[in-house]
Length: 311
Ligand code: TXA
Ligand code: MG
Image: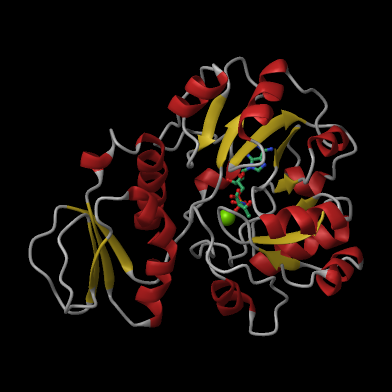
């Protein structure tokens, strides 16, 4: 465990500190300090109409933010917290408007990560969007954060994040819980573990997105992203293949049909493509792995479509 004292002081003084979670690195600021939260929007270049997730270290802490905690939420928290499941509640009026972008709901999650848990338990609840500049791929390593925000930016280094894709966002404010952003925890697992039926994520943009973040193009490197069948290999392209491996070609990478591995590596590969000057990243289709990895399949497909600019 790194020494957190100095980072905790920075948060208490209204500063911004990046920290690791099990999904991606977050850009943390005190969720009860409006000027600290404002700095997060400014640093990221994030549109003001895209709300932030509040991160807590204990279930009790949601009572400062959520106005209503339906029985289903209690079941979900028991089953999946700490973990990569963000829940959207009706908000208490005292929740800072800048966090919720003026919505009457607030998103909350409890990360499953030793450093994050210790950090938040000592700072109090933190807002934490992914610690990338708006539009860039989410950071899965401390060096990604430094690349976007500078070498001297305060980041708690916890090594590479385990999952590599952002949390599932589940809206609990409507009649039926619905997935606004797909992640590692999918509809099947929620049904199986908590016995709750949820509406799966709708891939194509709706007129007025309920999760405002979903309307922005995200997760994008400079390199163009292509997805589908692959025939032939070119030098200036980085290939992410299911199984075919070419040990002597460093631009051809196989993840051995394991979507956990592709999730873990995807954003790092996007960033690698830019750093090493590749023109494009080709991702071989993953449909054939859907049955084996249903939730990661939906999450990856969502991020790939966004990186292409289609969703
Ligand atoms: O895994 C994660 O969730 C990471 C780590 C750092 O915890 N955080 C993250 O935050 O991905 P961010 O800000 O990059 O994405 C938050 C998503 C956005 O799509 C946003 O629109 C949605 O959550 N969101 C936040 N508050 C919401 C609300 N009240 N209603 C609907 N969607 C909300
Ligand atoms: Mg983000």
